[in-house]
Length: 296
Image 1: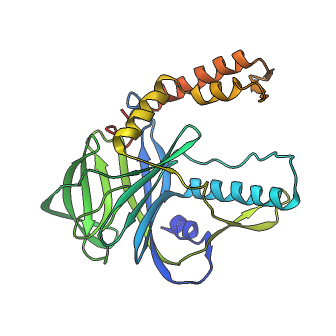
Image 2 (image 1 turned 120 degrees about the vertical axis):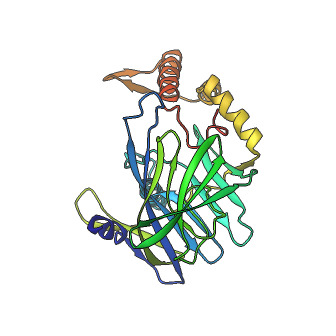
């Protein structure tokens, strides 16, 4: 657990009120045809008095660095943008739950657009008497069918929360572990610690190795859509992933260039063809979403 202790200490916080951060290791196979190609990402469930937020550590840091860079550019009036950023990870979505009603909202992008989708389907659990130890906690087994997958969860009543990773909640305790029936999506409990609320700050180094403080921020308010509307938008994107770019370039007052295998491309049609090929290949290989019914 040493690596986890160091990981959680990366967060230096402004004091306001306390919350509880649950850390999980999320293991998943992006391509269902390559089940052995497992990726791992650290994700956090931040629990506060009025609700919780589930998000990726890598995405949080990448968004923070980007927002701080843009803030500096605006402050100096510079138009020379050269932000390379950091690895944002594969978990690009967040999930927010409100207490005590447990309204659940998934916030996720499609290409360059952001959407907020309220969960419309209840999570119905079957609780099994089987138990096991996870860390120092006694956990009990439960199963559910949700989002097009069969899930097995292990929850503990030794912590005062009824929540879990992603959209999962509704059990009489905190979910510590989960795995789907295909073995291609799993959450493993890493640790728990208190954190001070409101401003979450992360330390990072600038190009000269000096310590700087990065403050988290958002990309702006996402568009509220129903699950049916989101699924329609996702299908449209899969069918034509460069539709937005094609429309933008058709206006004639937008110039863009692209570096492809060391060669600079400026012809609009060549750019569109290369982008379409790249994004369709990405969609083809990223074919194992956590919630298949939402991303058919």
